[in-house]
Image (cartoon, rainbow, N blue to C red; front, top):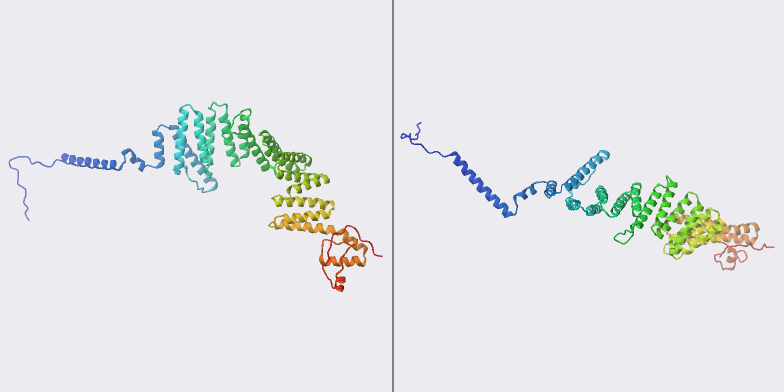
Length: 465
């Protein structure tokens, strides 16, 4: 098979071939044209070249870039130290207790945006020589994270930053005092009472002799005293079982703080608590003094509820000391104050206490009366207590009838015997010998049989001849 070849260039002229360079130039031209077209499309979409990275990079990267581009290096460092701190806490928790589900701070964009704003504000304030404004920015951050229960570590961090900034504020130590208070309250909320006490006592010391007031117009020193009163009281209750003597010391401090803060109501309650704890350890004489102090305050404040508590406590102490007549008067006042009140259970308790004392004195008629009132006024849903009250009532009734019953047995006459048989049929509260109703046999014989009526007999009937 033959093929036709191109003719030979006999004349020696050069054949012009396509240039490789010109081909590259054409492609470059086409690339430039395409790039210009894409760039024009980007501008039409409203996206600048510098913004493209914002869509491609992570939120963390963009946040860092934004802070650093604005020149806030300290804010960038503090933010990333917090990221690392949380990671270490998670690793430590995992090692101790297994898997722990924690939402990372880096994933909470709303929190980070607020933190960025306040951290930058604090850094601006430091640069401008205004540590007070830097303090306020960190305080805003601490208050912001109080709404998130799982961010206690961030609250602590920003309160500590407030403490650092407070030292540079020229305000006679007010910011430093407030920083101590904020840290103390934060520690107390999560149960670290002993550690909180250190900061609250320092707050009290720094406010002593100062006329500082908060936004509501309350004096900071009174506020310090009241907060210490609460903390001392909580500590006393917490350690009472293990260290009752130390518990008493804390309650004494609480009492002094309540008086220092000028809060008469809290001072009265502190006095009442001291009386109760002294009573619990067996020192009823000292307990009586504090209960009387509480009673006097309640009388001045016309606090009837408090007066009832005071009279009840005084009655217990006087009864323990063998001062029965005084205890009887205290319990009578307790009943008098609570009668007609809204709290029926308290009135029931008052009647029961008085009935117990009457029962101890052998005045069974009065004991029955007040046990009956206690049972009628108590909450019927408390079945266990109601049953116990009914048992006490039944025992008091038995004791109340024992004297008359014994006399009837001892005299042993036909009439008294018939009266006893009648009483056993109906189990009335008692019977009167001298005016005994007809027996059932007598009533049946006359055709007027009715249930016997009975009352308490306090004197023996004359013996039949």
